[in-house]
Amino acid sequence: MRAFPKGLTLAALALALGVPGVHAADDIVFGETSLTTGVFAFAGVEFHEGFTDYINLTNENGGIKGRKIKQVFEDCGYKVDCSVATFKKIHAEYKPILYSGDSTGFMKAVNPELVAAGNTIVSGVSFATEITDAAVYSRSFIEGPHYVDQMKILLVHAANEKPGAKVAFVHSDTGFGRDPIEAATAMTKELGLDLVETITTKPGSVDVSTEVSKLRRKAPDYVLFHGYVLSPINEFMQQMRDLGMKTTFMGTFWATNDLMIQKVGELADGYLGVNHLNFFNEGGDYGPNWIAMRDYNKRVHGKTSRASFYVMGWFQGMLWAEAVGRVLADGKELTADNLLAAIHAIENWDTGGIASIPVTVRNNSIPLARVFRLNAKAGKYEPVSETIEMK
Image 1: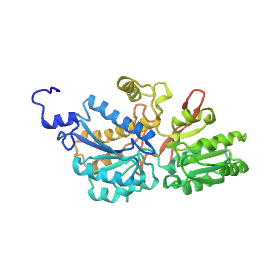
Image 2: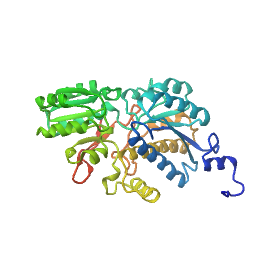
Image 3: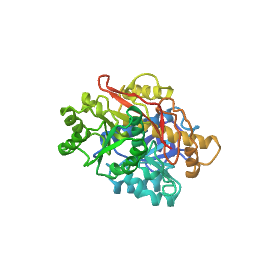
Image 4: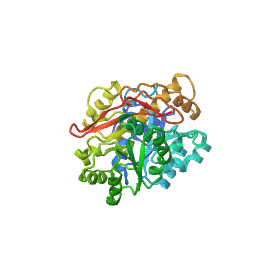
């Protein structure tokens, strides 16, 4: 039987044991629908652990302005109905001031109720462009550049690297995949690039031989992938390299990950990806918070390597804590309006090495990132551009 100190309150005991429904009155509640099972579990587990680890380290160091964070979460395996039901349950029981959603579908589905309730802010894994419309999504924001900005940042880099280059788009037949294509198509004209082909496929491993034949005939200098995490990008790479094509491959945030190194290897050498964060496995010294993140992993998990999705989860916790800290430092009440005002006021924020750029929030998003090139021999991504900002 465990022994507890005398005088320990019921609320404090419940917090220590993780008893549902009870927490200290001054705790700051962070809610989450996690992605630790289901089709995206390989990414969701890392994201959730990064988020959780940041919260635990913050609580070890006294919390936010002396107030501890209470984390409440349940897994839904990327199922929107479950995610919405879980949000309603956690919201009713804990009243979280900030809540992490597990998909664009969830953020769209929950938005009417979220706006009506008015007292919780939602962000999470989605970079959907429409969520930057603050008139509609007045209680939501996204923690990086939205999908249109991600595509545009890569296109700006391509235009700088090879003016007038031939470009092809390959995207998934999903809302995620279709999101930026129209705007990115217009951007190619503005940048003087030649868009020679746009291809749509199902996500996951599929037969892409017909699509590769189209690309072979058009011989693009760059193929930009969007709407995937890995497959069928690796299938395209393999078949195009087998045909002797010298195309440079590019991808947006979710496809700029360690799976590209682990599963594709030499075929992915030179791959260009967009990221507003630094990669855990790059090595070096990016700043005190980056070192703290790595030290925490070595001390608690015995790990010296983590996926890029882990850093995204850590950054979410850090961004939320920054907003909460600013509100408390100003002596204001922790309301959704005050938190959103604090988030939108973030300008050139130095994250101590977690982000690859000074963080500035505009229009419910962070419209800045850098372009990284995959060095297959070294097994890491290396920055090849300065900060690129979309306005």
